[in-house]
Image (spheres, rainbow, N blue to C red):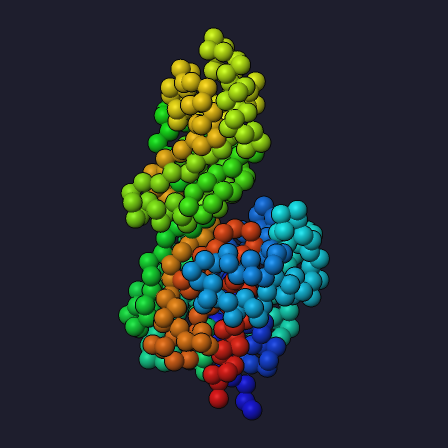
Length: 401
C-alpha cells in the first residue's frame, strides 16, 4: 500500500505526538508550524520545571477535566500518566515524581526532551515546514502564508493542532477561529484559564506589597478548600493557589458579576483557639502584636487583614477570629487571555466525531488545546495534549482507506 500523505498543522505537544504515532506506522507526515521553530509554548512550560504529568489514581486524573471528562476519557484511558512517563523515558529522559505527585524530567528542562523528540521524528521521516501559517482551506487543500508568499498543499488527511489562545506571541493566537467557523465548525469563544485576577487594592497596599508572597494559607471557592500560596501583584493576585480556583471565579464573575476567594490565613489554628487567644491579649495590645502573637501573621498577611477588614483594630475577638479564618478577597475580573497559562473554549465536541474528525470537514481532525476543555496546572494540560494527539492519530488511521 502506498504511504498516506498526512499533514499536521501545529508543532506543539499534540501535533508532535500525532506525528510520532503516524510516522511510526509508515505514513508520510509533514508538520507545519507558523513559528520559526517548533514547540515554543512547550519550551515555555518548562521554564520553571517541566511538569509532564501527574501520578494519582486514574479516575482522579480524569476528574480534573471537569465537564470535558466524558469527551476526553477515551483518549486519557488509552494514553494515561504512566504512558507519558514511559514515553519520556523512551526518549532517554529520566523522570521523577515530586512530593505533590507531579512528574518532572530529572534535568527539569524542556529543551533536552524536545531535541530528542524532534530527532526521533526526523529519523522516522517526518518533515518540518516552519514559518507556514495556516489560513484556511481552498477546496480540499490547505492554504498557508509563508515568507515566500501564499501556498497551497494537498494531503490525504489533515490534523489541526493549532493550540488555544493564551501566550499568542508563542504561536497559539486563535487566528484559526474565523476560517473554521466559516467552514461550518462550532467554536466556543476562548476564555482565560489558570490565570490571575484583578483586585482593587488600595494604592498604599499595592505600593508596599506588590510582589509579596502569601504562603501557607488555604483558599475556598465553590470548588472547595485548597492549600497553597499566591503572590500579590500590582493589579491583583496570581499563583498556584489562585489558578486552582480560576475557572470557578471566572465563571462566577460572568454569571453573577461578583466573586470572592475566601482565605484562611491561619489554617493550623482553629477558630475557637484564635478567639480564646485574642481574648487573652486584651484590647490594649496593638493589632500588629495580636496578629503576630496569636496567629503568627505579619508582613503581607497582616497587611491583607487591614486591607480587607479596615475595622480589624476595633473588632471583637470573635469578629477578628472569623476574619482570619475566612477573609474574603473580592476579585474584579480575570487577567487578559494573553497572560493566562491556558485557555478554556475552542472547537465544540459536538463538531467532532468519535475519531476526532470534524463532521463539517471530512478528513480534517483536531487535537490538543484547540478543543473545548480545560484543566488545572499540575501536568494535566500536557497529559491531555499528548493523549488527544495519540487519539487523533488513531482516528486518522481508522479513517484512511
